[in-house]
Length: 172
Image (cartoon, rainbow, N blue to C red):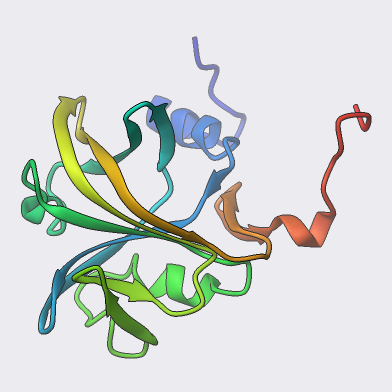
């Protein structure tokens, strides 16, 4: 049971406060090529399976990007570096050309954000409706990893793990 916070006006506000406590890596999911490209900030990307290599993420059912993600469609995952919070904000802003002020290239026939921490090219494997979201699984086809700290979203703010140091196994 979720207990509403003192300042929460409704059960929905209490749930939002609860979910805000779960830190997530910030990823831009991209599809399309050339002038027909789309991208959105996603905070729900997770590893699902090693064999086969699968990722999962969820998006609201009314997402413009989701309409372009049929089973078998190519999809790109750009895990953002700590310094890329401006890109995360831009790709979560509706009604703008999100690529306009963003440095990007086309790789594996997908839009790739320059200087991302991790780049993954994949193909959509499954779509499952759950609540008001669609859970999407994607099979990894290609991946590149750069050194650095990821951008995370926690308590409704973009943050860097590098700001706070990292906890080792003996720091409990």
